[in-house]
Image 1 (cartoon, helix red, strand yellow):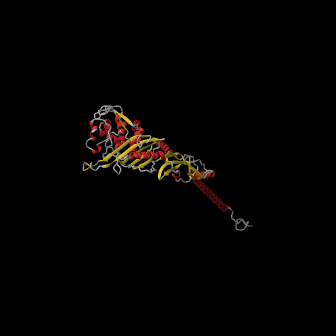
Image 2: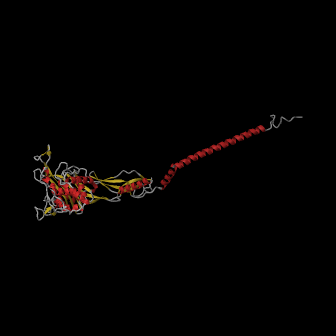
Image 3: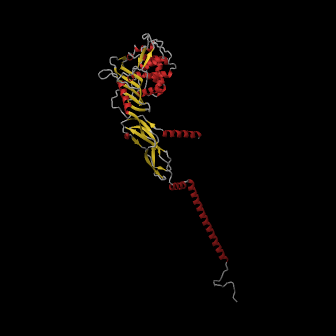
Length: 485
C-alpha cells in the first residue's frame, strides 16, 4: 500500500509537470524559393531546436569526408593528453597507393610515414581543416590500437548517440559501398560533439594551423580551411560561420564481378556540415549528395552554394515571434449550477515563441481548440481542460495547455437541492426509509392486532353477560318462577 501511495504521488507530479509544459514538435513548414542542389538536407535553429528545413533527411547517403566528424568525436572521447606524440606507421599510408582505387589521390596534410614529432592536436587540426585522410588513419591507429578497432568505436558511438541509419567502414570517409549516413544522423553526431567538447568547436572554427616540420617541410608549414564559407575572399563567405567539415568525392568506383570497374565510374558527390551565428541567431546545416560535376562536366561548388543561400534566407527572413501569450482567452465553456455565471473562460497557460518569416500573416496560424463538454460548478481557477494545438501549413507548431480562467461557486439553491439529492440518494438514507416503513408497518399491524384483541374480548364479555343474566317468561316484567296465589 505504501509503494502504491509513493507511485501515485510521483505520477501526479509528473502529470502536473506535463500539463504545464509546452509540447514542441519539429517544424519544417517553409521551403526556400531558390533551388537546393543537395539531395539530402537537414537545417535546424540551435537556439530553440526548431527544424527549419528537412529534405530526404533519413535517406542513406555517402558521407565523404564528413565522416571525419565522427573520427574527431571518438578522439575527443578517448584522448587524455592532446599534446602527446603519435606514431605514424606505414600502414596508415599504404592504402592510399594500392588496392582500392576509391582511395587514390586522397586529400592529405603532407604528414610523412614514421614522422616522430606529430601530436594528437596536430592530427586533429589536419583532419578537420585540411581534411587529411592520413591524419584520420594515424588518429585511428593511435586511439583505437588499430584502424579496424577504431572503426568499431565509431559505430558504437553512433549507436550511443541515437543514429539509426549510419555505418562506418573507415575513419576518413573515402568511398566504400557499406559506408553511409543520413543528414539527420550527421546532425546528431555534430550536435553531440559541439555540445560536449568545446575543443571540437575550437578546432572546427579555426581558419589556419601551423604544422610541425618534417623532411619535406623543414621550416614547418601551414594548413588552411577547405570551407569556402569561412574564406573572406570567397563568393560564399558568410560572417559567423564556424566550420564544421567539408566532404567531396569526384567519382565512385564500383566492383563488377569482383573487379574494379574503373572505366565506368559513378559521378561523385559533395557534402558539407556547417554552423553559423549572426545577430543572435544560430543554425546548423547538413547537406549530402550535391553533384560534383554539372551537366557540362564542370566541377561545382553546389555544397557551398546551398549553405550560403540557406543562411542568407534564414538570417534575412526569420525572426523570433510571439504566436500566443499566456492567459489569452481562446474560448468559453458552459457551466451548470454556477453561481452568478453560466460560462467560464478558457485561457492559455504559456507564452509561445517560434521562428517565423517576417512577412507571415499570423492569422494564417490555425488554433485547433479541444472539444470540452459543459462543466458543473464548483470550478477552480486553473483547472486543466486540454490543449490548444497551433498549426501552420498542416504541421503542428506546438500544443499549449489550457485552463479555466476563474473560480465559479455552486449556486445556493442548486447546492441545497444537490445536498438534498445527495442525502436522498445516500444508501444510509434509503436504508433508514426502508427501516422506517418496516417499523411503521409493524406498528400498524400491532395496533390492528391489539384492536382485534380488544374487540374479541369485548364480544366475549358481552356474550358472558348474556349467559349469566336472569331468564324471563317472555312477558315484560314477569318472572316465570314467581307463583301466583
